[in-house]
Image (cartoon, rainbow, N blue to C red; front, side, top):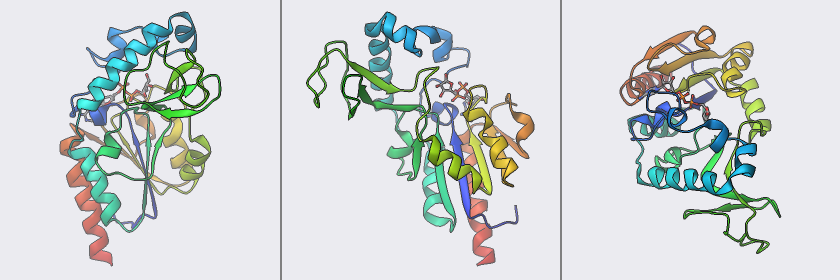
Length: 240
Ligand code: APR
């Protein structure tokens, strides 16, 4: 790479958290292989059996709270500290490993595991413990109306105004650990490319939107991302 980039976007998926011990969705023993998406990640499923959905996310929250960031997350912190351009993170992950690693400028487009939204008053609340069908909203005091602040299939993504603005000014787009099968996140690379960004993909194997990436680095992101970021940083030191 020879350019000094002004606006870097890093799009992350479940794969960046795999080396922290968290399951991805579509691998052989992934979350979606062991649960029915329509039961735990759809509005219909939540209305049909809210207790099951709360139980799924309470268990996932416990798993996530035990996990620590891995070298891929830490490499992003180093890039944000040492690179002269802006580095924004658009994550599909509901875990908080980017935050735990000290990453900044994080946009959770699929929601966050330690938040719930009250369907009565609309308040979004931090919830580090279990939430269930009896939990009362601390804001309006109504119980039984709390939903995990997770974007279910069919719901609108979060932070999309900011995401659109970031994609239009992006000159380096790096996708890490996502299979590229869920839209609109899977189309972000096309938008970035349209606006002239260089595009890089870090996964274990070719993905569904492989075609849109200029470069592919296959392997464990905890091993492949740190040297890539070190090189990005050293190139700016040579030029400045
Ligand atoms: N390093 C790099 N890439 C990895 C690693 C790793 N250690 N482990 C797995 N991967 C890659 C896989 O090759 C795969 O391409 O991460 C990707 C994980 O794909 P998915 O399990 O489909 O996860 P993701 O792309 O984040 O899913 C997107 O789907 O169900 C919804 O809301 C859910 O946010 C999720 C969305």
